[in-house]
Length: 494
Ligand code: NAD
Image (cartoon, rainbow, N blue to C red):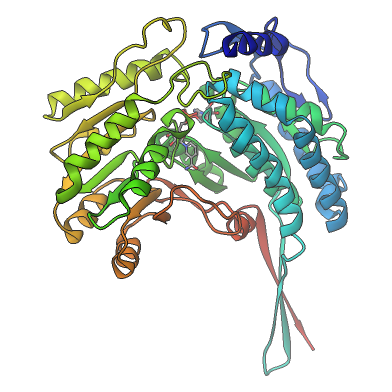
């Protein structure tokens, strides 16, 4: 029955491939660019034809955003006006949450329970959060003895290029868009060429939300074509990027030419440290969620699991037993816990890393094979391996799939050293009942976020972002305020 319902839902939403094109200067542009097929990773079927925005279309979108910033009402609009628009977008997303969640699941392969339960409501909440946040965004005033007033205020940054990844398309892009709009900017959005459907649908919905012409624009296409044309465009003022570290490096190189701002949310290989005094069951639940949520395709995945020697065998056994029981299947079937990988390359990458790990002396604990009867989609069994050498590729490279790498440690000092031996510094997880130890380890880890005895809770007022090669800048309330505003200081003698 679940499979039939899934087929009906799929057919209702994408009975024939939909055409997706850019949106500039207040209207969808004609379908004219290079047509790129977009696949459903669960079936391998083409669900959309993406019309790639070439350099001329990117130029038109940036110019529309530039014009709207330099001459339009949005950057100078009142807080009340911006709040009304942001709340209208929030309401539009919630009114279409079922449709958006199903589209997101069809396009990414992420189970519906996660897109409907988490990512789409979060996308809506991003707009509500920033609508409320700007009530409390204030300037500063200093008064010196010599009789000067110094006023410090924040102004919108200008034209923001917002480039997103494929793993959480609407959730991550909406955070950028909501914040950029809240602080009075105009935007050009570029979603991943693999997962353009929900962002395109959002642009459709935003037409009725009261945004002046040219404030939001959309370009679509591959990174080396559309993305490069956007991030290298002289008329943008900044790029806010979420994606891989190597792409981030290329974009920062392009931005350096014009000394433009860069906000970079990049890759990770986060440590999940389980001490022998941890609450065993909670740590186990947390470790599983940390590495298998979103099909394991998460920047903040706790994919390096360090377990202290006395509980190591028991913990790994329990983990593998639970992993074998994960329900792999169609993301649209209720109860599915693990959907397909985004594409054939990502599926192959899982298998490649099993081979790389074995050649480095790691032991395969379970998984990594094809899923019988599901060859049409990019399904693969989740993997657990036990590594020996922290310097091995298995322990140092982001695999970006449902792939857990275990390491066994003896002491707190040792595990902190091992966890920090990484070029990444996005997040970390610590499981211990020792209060002092929890704080010591959290302070010693060189990462932007640490979860203690809980996985992945997030308060949007707090900062999220990476140390080291995991990024530059922070998302969340104040982080976004810094990212999407310029600061102006005015001195006046009194
Ligand atoms: P990616 O870097 O391949 O692509 C991201 C986006 O950049 C896409 O829209 C792509 O088209 C575009 N792009 C590619 N080359 C470009 C170029 N030269 N100029 C401009 N744009 C270009 O990343 P991905 O595979 O889509 O996403 C997975 C990666 O994203 C992982 O490394 C993951 O850790 C990271 N990620 C980070 C966060 C975070 O918050 N830190 C969140 C999610 C994903």
